[in-house]
Length: 129
Image (cartoon, rainbow, N blue to C red):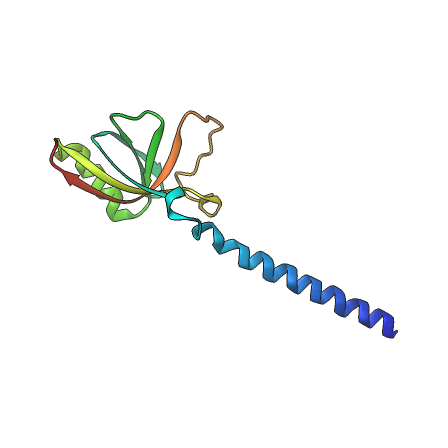
């Protein structure tokens, strides 16, 4: 009986350690070095397409390999208005999508590796050069 109880305690301790390790590892997706995860770009907007749940995908003129997704309602509205009202360039701050962003409306559901989706953090209108 004592052996069985000892085995249960050991199994419970191992399970708790595994759970702790799993929960500790989850936030490390956002702790990666910033030079591999974030960037700033300047270009003109080519198109803005709706992606569902209020999110928009912004495509820029000089790149056909990257799309910039905005899920924040205010930023999505700003992107929609800039395509109609602004002739100059925009500055987009973005970050790379990670495993925790799988439920994002702009997450790649396609198996087409021809473009990369970045998640937009801000969009600012600037005059053209």
